[in-house]
Amino acid sequence: MQALRPVTIQRHFTAHTPGSVLYRCGDTVVLCTASLENKVPDWMVGKGKGWITAEYNMLPGSTSPRKSRERSGKVDGRTTEIQRLIGRSFRAIADLKKLGERSLTIDCDVLQADGGTRTASITGGLIALVDAVNSVFKGAPASEYPLNGSLAAISVGIVDGQPSLDLDYIRDSQADVDMNVVMTGAGRFIELQGTGEEATFDDDQLAALIKLAKHGITELTQIQRSALGEDWPW
Image (tube, rainbow, N blue to C red; front, side, top):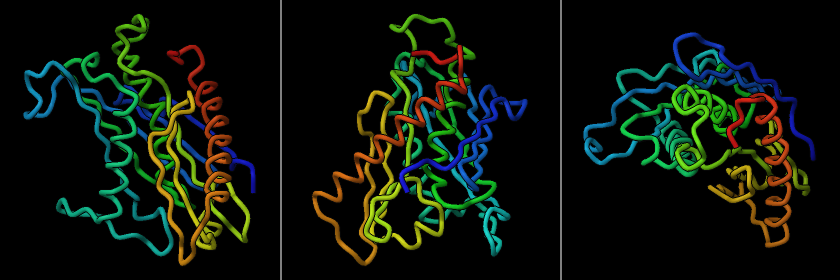
């Protein structure tokens, strides 16, 4: 499959954060909210720069059978790995000194899961992040704006011997190779996560997957730009 699943975006979905987006790609649905605080973690106080972090969670009804709710601060390894990926992806496009001593937290809550939840969280989270940043920096010159550009993420894989884009759960479970790719809107890589599932892959297949991911991220960047409209800052 060489096409993205249908994407729909609803900005300002909640009322109490400066950035919130309901992001749907196919049957995967994620609520991304961006909260802004005029303080930083204790270990950053006085350093003259801000911080961006992320939290990720799959709600109990997002899967069948029901996923148990994470309680008492207990977070499983998969959740920890994904929220670290989301946080460092956003920090890769930020100038934390320009942010000043402020903290941004991107919360990504999966309401319905059908593959690609981490990539949907990053792609939708960018829109929530921009809205939150614009609540302070809208209209600021590029020399003072704390985000250097956009980013998006997509999954690709080798399914039935062929490169495939934007894997849903069924195709992901059938993939011989799967990969998550995070890139800037300008085409620079932030992260590649590629794994052979009881299989291997060669240079040509890797190149094909990266080419397909670039194509998908180019499309997603245009979707993000359209969703933000005149609030697109670059």
